[in-house]
Length: 260
Length: 297
Image (cartoon, rainbow over all chains, first blue to last red; front, side):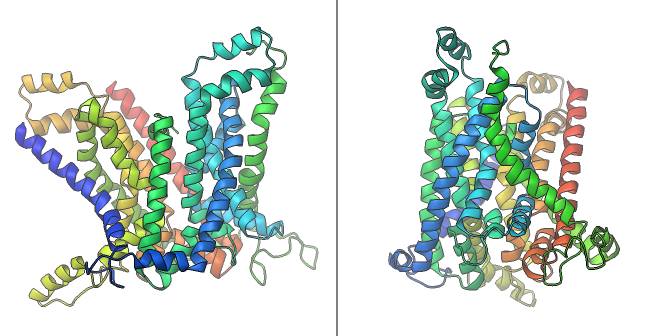
């Protein structure tokens, strides 16, 4: 029995190491005083200095930020409505449209939106990327908000209505404050998904527009420099902070993936 | 709520905006792509005019015929399915001990251990690919060790990067959390009394695993398998960055059709075949999983 649990713990530790060692290496080499990501030479912050002077990278970061803010704001509004609608009413079409973008291969959404925008003569750029990001974020927000609503006492809203509150007032003063942690968690999740998205952005950005993942992609396709490690480290830090906050606000967040 | 007269209106006010958005930016593009798969490619990419000079409507199944008749495309699909299958198997091997450990640990540590599995999934997808570029790179320690060993046996040095091996390792890496989560959700519900009873009746550890734990965990295995297999089938960034010239998968083919050859109809056919294959497999896995669960219940 003891031997078995040691073997089990060993195998599990190996799996954890497999998950973390690669990311750890990226972070460590971002402080390495060598152009080659091969062996440790000495500590430096040069790659971060290169990073903040890299105009293309800063433009890309700015674009990612704008798209992320717009996409998370709009998709949170629409996703909250969707979560509310699915919780309150028996709907047929909406639940399918909420789950489908999450369930189908990502590349399909990328190429179909590419055809869609080009056929409509819609210029590919920041706006088309933001519209695409909103489309795939709505579902994630809706699922988180719905999970929150499922744990809420619906009679509270009913009581407010019975006391004469209009539907809008009941929502504004009773339902919304109660589901707020879910809404904020959904917004943070949408922002993270938007900032990290590569595949759908790749097809909907067109030639002239660059986001952080697209910039990283072209850098590692052409020439690998530890500047990529530096930007990766900062991006990981940002994502980590956002996700930890989101998970604190909505404990079901971690499990919502498998329920969908 | 159902008794209120304003329900119908409320339904549309609440559900309408997200429904409209998803109809315009998800359902319509998908339908347009299905239609595009029945059109001819345009002279300069995109689509040919829907009505040609002779007034004939441009609707045909040429691109589907091309997909079925040219063996190279089927071969890419088979190769993609093979990579996705290997990815699923290796993920299962790694995920089983991990999910077991998390399920057996005390409630205090469980959430933390689970969070540690999920966190890497939230780091940028490209960063995770890039990490393997470093590890498998020609100057890195791993390549030196491997090629040193090969040298002892008089074998030529090999490149770990830009190979099928690199693609597979990275596919397993990015997919692992999707196998661990459903497996954990399943294993956590297992009744320890069953295993104790089996032990009292003289079953050894091996028998207890294969005849109780594993069969009971099959719904989790199928769910995890689906979550790993389907995204792996359509992946394009990993073979694009880490693969060699032979590692063209469906995703790369689709990207080529839309961004290089600009043959939209054929690209649409490939995307549709990929999606249909994915949905059929997901449906089959869900069905088998449910049937298995019913039998063991």
